[in-house]
Image (tube, rainbow, N blue to C red):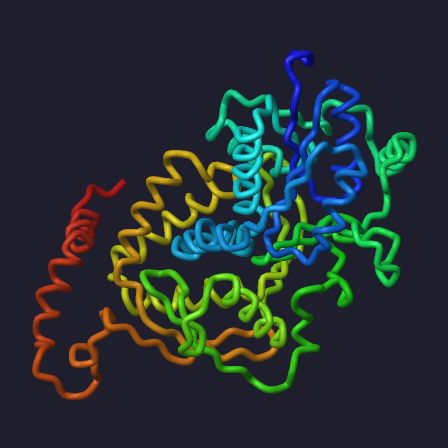
Amino acid sequence: MQQHTVNKVVLAYSGGLDTSVIIPWLKETYDCEVIAVCANLGQPEDFAAIEKKALASGASKAFILDLQDEFLTQYAWPVVQSGAVYEGKYLLGTSFARPVIAKALVDVALAEGADAVAHGATGKGNDQVRFELTVKALAPQLQIIAPWRLWDIRSREDAIAYAEAHHVPINMYASDDPSKPKQPYPYSMDWNIWHLSHEGADLENPANPPHDDMYMVTCDPIHAKDEATLLTIGFTKGIPTTLNGNAIDAVTMMHELNRIGAENGIGIADIVENRLVGMKSRGVYENPGGALLMYAHRELEYLCLDRATLHYKEQVAIRYGELVYDGMWFAPLREALQAFIGATQETVTGEVTLRLYKGNIMSHGATSPYSLYNEEFVTFGEDEVYNQADADGFINLFGLPLVIRALMQQNAPKE
């Protein structure tokens, strides 16, 4: 990159130490203007304080963008429709949050006439790929600056020293609330309305179990309430639209499901996952609302999709999940698979009732006007629509390849 061509940079800003330090580093390294963009994806932050901190750290402007509805309706809901779960456990909450943020960076950069965008993702993780592939897909003319791959800062101590030398506020928490701890939470976290992830510290050893006091969204099931909870989620074409019979917007839906799931200890996923960059990492995810939606959606598909479509969609979900995990949200294949998924969801409309108890999600009935379940055909009682004798010919034809192979083996020359 030619440094003299960078006059204005739009930075993905969280309010934490790293991105606060990046502001003066960009100004010092490129002699450029820095605009901070903080995406509100439902994380419990003091956004007014974050804006204040960005400006105090040297940003010329700071945008706080409420993207919660877009995040859910344009990213989370398509993932729910897909049924994608990375490596059987991870509900992709960070994976599809990054393209939302990166798209916002691009939008601001184009509106502000910026030359480049920047992010605080490290060179070891997946997020650098997710941010940068989104930028490349939407605005390839923008330069991308990744300070962690360029600067000499190598540790938290280095970052604090740099911050102090450049008069950057170093309190981990943007808020001035004295009740909040001054030391950083020991884990690397990503928090949004869909999930909360924990990595690092004692979790880096897969032999260590998560601590009870780590959970900030849900709870260890052993501490969940002692009564079971019933709830009913309604879907329209695979998209959640009602809760307990009431139509509500996406953000309210997610908050309510998180609350209900958390009371019952739902949504903990502990996984040693395969990162895109080649290493394994251990993460613990809290996904109470997401777990409920994925489970309920799956139950409705059991009712509404035929065998061939359901089974093929299961294969598609694996590839779809890999694409989302790898930062390929705006790739042609992900978009093409979404079109297929959308076609499968035309009849995934109905209601699913779930029973929750101490970390468990159990089916409690489902209904749909498009149900393919026909009691008249499947009953063990007497019926007038199915001739059981038909099964004889079916089995003979279906098993014919096995018969032919067995005859060949019987007549084959003996060695």
